[in-house]
Length: 220
Image (cartoon, rainbow, N blue to C red; front, side, top):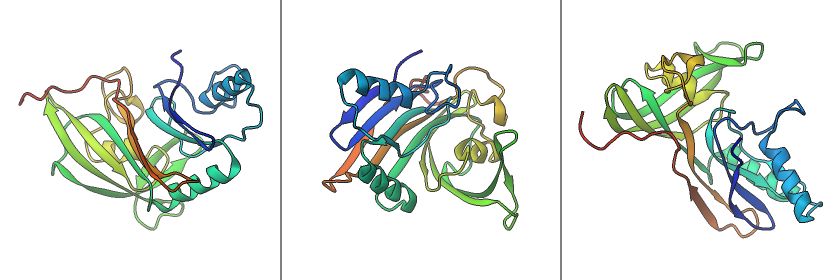
């Protein structure tokens, strides 16, 4: 299995790239996960005092950027930033089956998680347990019945992007759980993140290239 990649590191934070298929955390000792690998790497370096705190999470089939605090103070500050959505921005790219109209807009839905099946679904506003979910999208390219979208996530709900796009008629390619017909890699990447450094307050921004095939720039 491909290992994670360190994009940036200092005494307070890690910025990491997680490949598709690697679990962030796992309840089963037999299943490798990124946080266990990271702790093992620190032990191999002789850095045994770090108290790692995961700041954002990605589903196992989703690739992209993860932020980890290396001490309790840094992790707490970054978690506050993630919760208030003021100083952080989380951007995704998704290859979807179909097209969205209009080509740029905002999706607002209410999602209800089913812990038994590990899925979420759209429910009417006011449904007990339903949580308001919002994202903004922009269509970058369209070709052969597929669209490449850039998405800014404005809330952080379980499977939010996958559920909202499927409900809008454009399931993510490779997402058999929520209605895509094609098998293969789930084509969703957390490709950009911005935040304030927890110690220096410097604004930081990181980007990666999605590993799934991009659409050509030629018109359909």
